Length: 320
Ligand code: SAM
Ligand code: SF4
Image 1 (cartoon, rainbow, N blue to C red):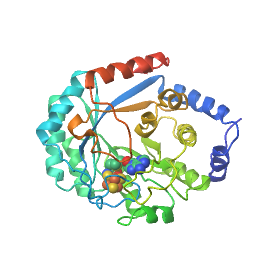
Image 2 (cartoon, protein in one colour):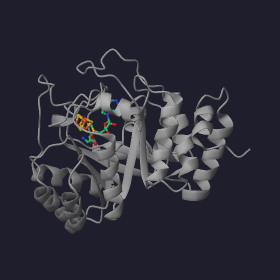
Image 3 (cartoon, rainbow, N blue to C red):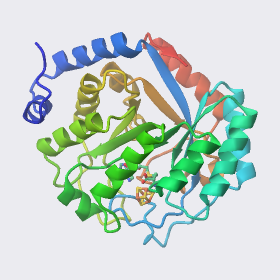
Image 4 (cartoon, rainbow, N blue to C red):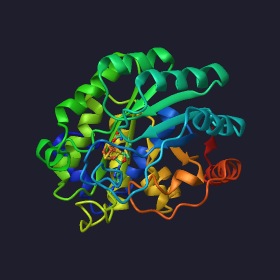
């Protein structure tokens, strides 16, 4: 059967009793379009300061009990080098929205990474002006991750007192025109989200169109306004990843950290994902980058890379 990927069709597919034919189709499309490679990306969370108030996030500005940190440029470069030395070829530099790192300073860090390694640099530092994105692109940044979070305007507004969906999407379109490989994505299981909203989320990925899409379950954090909300379903998240594969056959689709935190790696790979991220954030900071509660192991960059490579091979896939 050819799945119906219209808005109505997607909402119906998400609710199927037996989704296995769609998983199989997503896996087939994945294999045909991007092969068996699983790209392993190093994720460095270099600052947990944030000026925004996203209702779901443990780093939100009003949270006064969280110790905040900023890694120095030297610390950032040392972590990146450790990842490079054990085989990582992409570094993802992620942070809260923290203007302490001016675009000039971030650009210098990117330039230094590009000068000393052949790594691709992905940034995930939130919303910036066109000029700032352009400066970072000129400095050598290859990719940018900025999830649209939810494609429903009312839901977006209820979760983001300091931004609009239109601004978010404008940033994504700007990133595309500047030549970034552009990543969006959304959370599954946000309170009030319906299958129709998820269908809109999926279609927005295609509309941009995204080169990457991070789709992860919403996980409630006890120090946020959404503390009492139910967590998003892992199964529904995997369904969304599979449908994203059908809509965007060549996209890079991570098995998001939120899913791997729950130990669902293998199953999410079977449904269309072809990327995995490993945190390389130093132990001194790692547990303070608490966007949602998670029992995180200590960072051991070589051992964790090796383990992940072995796990990927055991699934019959090829780590890169
Ligand atoms: N500040 C940047 C931004 O918002 O784009 C990057 C860092 S932010 C912590 C990265 C992602 O974390 C967000 O795009 C959001 O989807 C995710 N996130 C935050 N809180 C979450 C939660 N409680 N459950 C699941 N994902 C969450
Ligand atoms: Fe800040 Fe990003 Fe968390 Fe929003 S999701 S509060 S912008 S770190």
